[in-house]
Length: 340
Image (tube, rainbow, N blue to C red):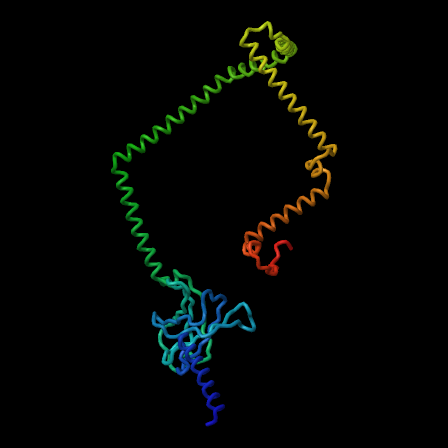
């Protein structure tokens, strides 16, 4: 056998084993003769390839594929591979049921048995429908039975509770006390309404008195202004009092206050002269920085170059150790220049 033939044969066998292994891991055995059935759904929430198919809890197959219906793109066709030997009637229903472990399952439900002519053949369509989780747990008949039993139990509990409430003196006393509290509350609110009605005239009188006070303040506005003017004149007269006429401690305090004010006044005047000089373009680096744009740009460039030099010195200190060496070494430019 030629070498090329052996390589081709080996390649075909390898591809075949890979496809068979992939199918086998997904749950499909290509050597089994399965029955292929189809079902159409409006929604297939959670259905995917290898979704299990059950009949009364027994797994009988897997979902092989699904695709859209060409005539109606809103409907999905699900391809189901049923194990060989499993008979499914033509009137069976493929129900998509949510699983407790997450995902969904497909349950095949039908009644009775089928013979050769009544059994679904490979390539047939059966009815498909969605089912809720509660519907997958129990049937409608069982749910109706559960609700009836629950209703009986609740009725018995309510009857027992009513009986115990009727026989309990403490509960009856509590209900009576609550009624008495409500009666007293109603009486209190009535009295409060009458009190407010009787006090309305007094409240109106108080409001009139407040209005009269504000009117008096308005009428005596000129007098109040004169009093304030007198107080202002008194403060100015106090400022004109000679220090020599005051006591020793007061004289010392006033002298210190005058010295402080004089120093503050001098500092403010000096600051004003300095700002005026800077504003008018006086001499010095600060004035040039304010008025000479070229000087400011040169200063900023110098600071930037100094920063780049320090950065290069920190990142590449070996370059600057050459200064101490007598051997001349050529300068090597960095791969990335931070100055660019």
